[in-house]
Image (tube, rainbow over all chains, first blue to last red):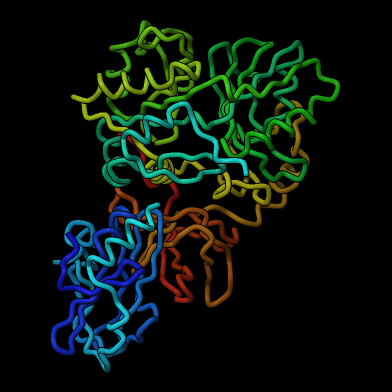
Length: 128
Length: 364
């Protein structure tokens, strides 16, 4: 169920790469663990994010989670839909529940991310 | 290592694929279908909670009433057999040991229900206060499984399986009867802001009753409810939570439950300190907050005015009923002015919130 064309990290986030544009989001497992997402804080369009650093938060009723940028770059688009309807992260994390699009300065950090199969193995292991 | 404590219903929660968390040393369900769905189920229909982790302490003896009166701030002398009283229990300095429900069986027998995570502390405290009173105080928490059925349909559903006429059972009273043939203490109380019942049975009957209520209420939309929704429900109804609104460093007068402190009754622990605080004016007050800026104020976040700390958030959440982000905060009393705007420090960012009345939700 985790799309094979995406890259994943062990913080349960994904990156969708198209040229030098990278779309960030959280995984289906992340939304399941969080429960009902009720608030999302994202950077403004035109600002920059730093790879490995927090660029916002996703909050469920009970928990606050930082979200981490997988690459550095300029934010070229923010999914304003999820700001008003944060439950899109629950219902469609890989589709309408995406978070931001970044114009990457350098795509090489993506090489440290894992494939869908590797991610699924990681989740299975973590649940033990 | 000592493992977490589990209630008699643990296997039911596992079977229902509930998400389990540690809550004050207990492994408890935080959610089943999802916090928001469960929250709405209780407001609109009914929900079933496992609250077997709550503590129960029995007080027996000739001096039972006098002892309870000394222990709590509310006036237990107004109780009749079968009636229940809510009360804080304070330290001599006015700080709160716990908040309790006091059930009067008769003048020589009171049954006291305390918060799960405070049970041992409360029991120790209560034993220390026995002194010359002719009473025996016993921690009987292990002798009960407790289920709470809450929501507008609670009475209709429970009536199908009990020989007690629930229509005669008014709020804050209890009686003994059978539920699904099981000897039960049935109490019209709860912690959700809805009508409902709390049912105490012997632990071996817990699972039977749990299953039965879910079965006979299924068509009415009854669902099992976890601690997540229990918290949002109680919070919307301004029902305080020990460790959040209440604590050893907070007095009942500050926490907005001064109504349950009766200065005109006999002496009780904390009376002098509370009397002084009342005369001098409380230094802090509990206020309601509605976020003006984007964000959720959460427990322990700092509250500021013009960059200066004026208090902290005691509870804060997205409110499923109001569809807003709201909070309760304890702030300097002189700044507790309805309609004023203050700052909530959310990850070092000041986000505006407006002071509003604390009773966010009241059932119609």
